[in-house]
Amino acid sequence: MSILSASSFQEFLIYLCTKLLIIFAILPVHEYAHAYAAKKMGDNTALMHGRLTLNPLKHIDPIGAIFILLVGFGWAKPVPINPRNFRDVKKGSALVAFAGPFSNLICATIGALLYRVVMNVYFQTLSEVWLYMLMALSLFIQINISLAVFNLIPIPPLDGSHILFSFAPYKVISFMHRYQQILYYGMIIMLAAGILSGPFSTVVGWIYEGLINIFFWVDKLFLLFT
Image (cartoon, rainbow, N blue to C red; front, top):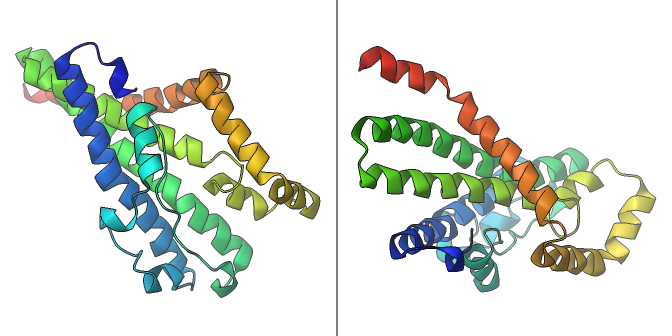
């Protein structure tokens, strides 16, 4: 899913435009979801720091954006949150952490519905325009799923770690905090080296196929009304 892997100029443009959409629209949605959930749980820290917004300039991390362009997953600036303000610290921490990846899954689901609609239009018209749109939607879905899966990995500072810490024993939490930098950079190196890319891609593929298949009924509607 790297823009460097594009086999034609048209494919390069599709990759570039779709990834820019992810960077300037979807990453802000992810961070906004964290901020909104935190506010609902009783913490206004993100609001006071101007992060309860969809303005991409408030959320974009340059290095994370480069990773999106080159690898297919990345990150934005973490939303500042103070769990001590939550009405229920454990529940609040878990829900706020899950809100970001959940927003990516919602975006992927919307993309899957549009993909199924566009696929039927393409089969009827065989127009290259619809084919390029299919490619863009497929990439959009895959990146959103990748962001959700990546952020749910239970290693600090990823969202999955905050969910894990909400119910894990103290010894586990202490170990994760003590070695969080080693664990995090070790995971990044293994992903970049391809060691974890197989399992990661498999999980993303399962979710991708599941979302596309959920909207099987779109095909039946097209057959019914055409």
